[in-house]
Image 1 (cartoon, one colour):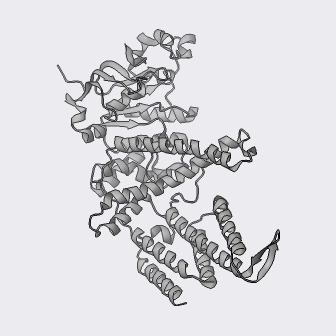
Image 2 (cartoon, chains in turn orange, green; image 1 turned 180 degrees about the vertical axis):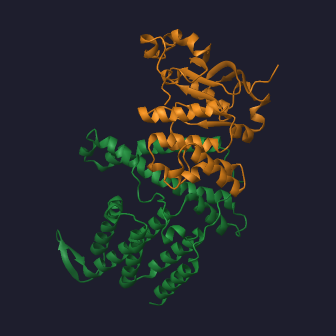
Image 3 (cartoon, one colour; image 1 turned 90 degrees about the vertical axis):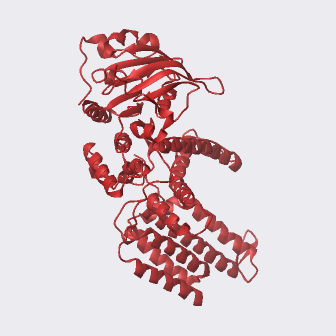
Length: 251
Length: 251
């Protein structure tokens, strides 16, 4: 039997104050998956995804990447599993768009010429090349999210984790960002996305995980779980209520 | 889109932008030393030179002065305090308290020197990327034994990089307070507490997020350093800086 790309086994994390945390979570991720991780506020989505990148250590259980525990080599883990945070402003450390994308490869101690080539290629791929000398603070919300993705892509990840990527984005910004994410997935990138907004991803995602009170309560295809969303505190896409086949969000 | 405050790095192609950061470091030291000894004429020459560079890097002077309004108020207090506390012939009286001409003269000179140091620092931070700053600090600290130059350099660049973010957050907090008529509060201690407590909380939270974001992208001290960029005019600038310092010494 083939080893899954990422395997989460009985993952448990409890906070010292007893609030929040996640309990006995198990699932696996295959190459090319596009997974939505949905749940109410405080259901444990952010705690779970911070474990996947090694930012939090579990109280019990383990995470395996290509069959190896991710905590054995954290640098490799963070290179292979990129994380795009909810607030792009706090993720940005560079003074220019170019510097920001170069930050990850510089941490990996790559050669300067290779870093420069990589950064240019990724800025072109995401349509940010015209902004390479701009101060990231002057970018729009959508451009900042794309820049955060570019910063992760420069490290050649196998999996990209997004924490609420569409929060506070307007309609054109959401469409444009979604087009970029879907494009990455179609090229074979594995995506895990924590979000409340299932409707935006109806056409794009392949699997839905639902969390409630720190536990993984549902795992299946989107079509099979649509009817259970509202009972878990997640808004059922209104397009599903009024039409048989929802119109796609993707541009 | 955030408004850029004058201390933030502003990309450009001016003489100061293209100058090697090590040279800029040296010039800032020379300027600061010269300003310490400067009389009115030297201060005026410095002012003209610094405003010329402000114009060259296209930093709007009025907007910059507006951002420095609290600092300028502080300078006015210095001038007044000097005028009130120094002995000498009274120039005029303020509510019955004589203000001496000598004190006023000394106060204006001290305030002018403070102002020039501030503008020198502003020019430096607005034209220097934090990555280059880190690199230059590392270069200067390397020959000093028992100093962890990489760690110190990162701390300097992060502190400077964080300053504009703190100023931005202070403005946001002030706006939030004023939008609920907080500006009607007359007690300065209460006003100060209302601004600083949420600001401190925000700053610590942002620092936490920044650490997580850096850790998620494999941040370590052993990383590819940015290359020093030279404009070829470094010698001219160094000679000018040295000349200015010598003139101020012998004046």
